[in-house]
Image 1 (cartoon, each protein chain N blue to C red):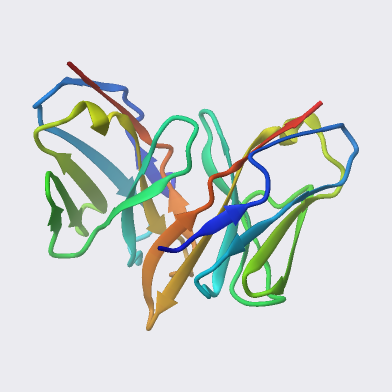
Image 2 (image 1 turned 30 degrees about the horizontal axis):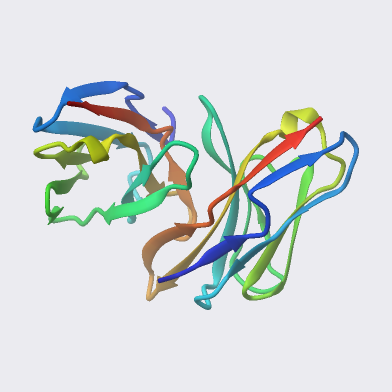
Length: 115
Length: 111
């Protein structure tokens, strides 16, 4: 089974702090994604990456950046945390083989609270 | 029209009932379709892919209607353990890699 591991389950940070959320997958997937999930708003894509050192903005990239230095690791960075970034953050990875998408596997999520 | 839309529910059904969810999508060029299940405070888990010809996995049947641009999920003989939020996902514009998710439909199966 593909395993996607997020480094923290729960995190509490102060406004203005720089926050790093780490995600590691063990199945050699090319594609990795960061979403946030909020009640009533569903899953919203923040950033994604097709390959090492490649990144693309999703629908809500403002206030975030990402890093993918190794294929298995995709980090989400909150440059200066704000209270409106309190959310559940979900990392996912996927494989696409000959154009067929096999769906995402999600990590167990990081529930971030910014105070 | 939103990219992916679902009836948020909630759906409350008795054990043993048959329940169906629909999900509409706006991009007629979409190629990849999925149903995910999400338990409370957990991550979404892939339930099944949706293929053009329709597909079945035990009590679950998924169908795709390209003409009307929707996918459906049918659950037969509902169990208490089926209580969860069901999310549909469709690949986004210009990309077969990136999925757009519906907001989910909450299902509660009652004894």
